[in-house]
Image (cartoon, rainbow, N blue to C red; front, side, top):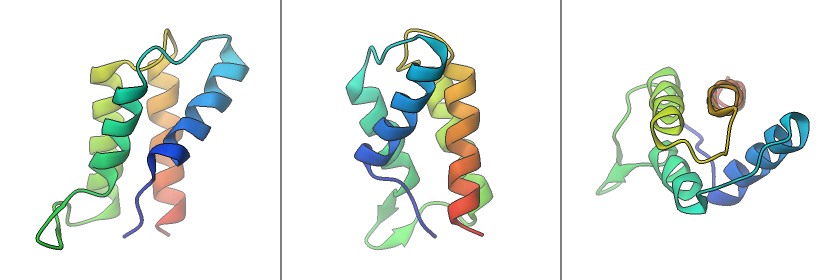
Length: 87
């Protein structure tokens, strides 16, 4: 299962920001969302499927609100990217 790096999440955020005229307000929240996508304990992934992982990342983005606006859009786009790279 493939996750995203903090830099990958920032790249997605940058695209959403450019498209919708918002800005990143919390870079630590972007890093946290990336960390959720690769979470494991002793090498064992915490999610049983890419769908579960992508859903949780989306949920975390909506909860943390790292952008000044359009966080729902950012969450949905990130979820779609995660599902696409895990086909």
